[in-house]
Length: 76
Image 1 (cartoon, rainbow, N blue to C red):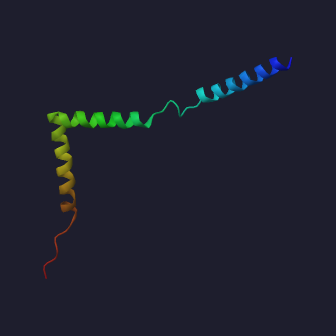
Image 2 (image 1 turned 90 degrees about the vertical axis):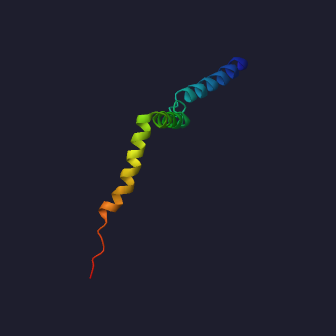
Image 3 (image 1 turned 30 degrees about the vertical axis):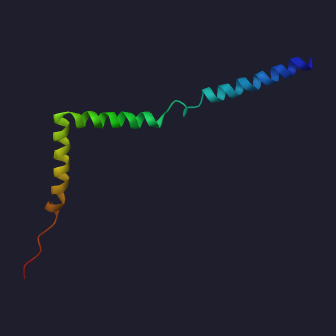
């Protein structure tokens, strides 16, 4: 009688632990996959001519933007 109870209790607790592990949402999300997808997309853009031109436009726009916002010093 006690042997059946001990076996049932042990297996029941293992089943509960397994269910808790399977139902965790953070086990389904891998942050490395998101970073790899982002890096792959950036590499594809850098490999194409259109991607290089777009990156060049962004860089040149970011370099020109501060020059347009500043006013020349007043001459006195």
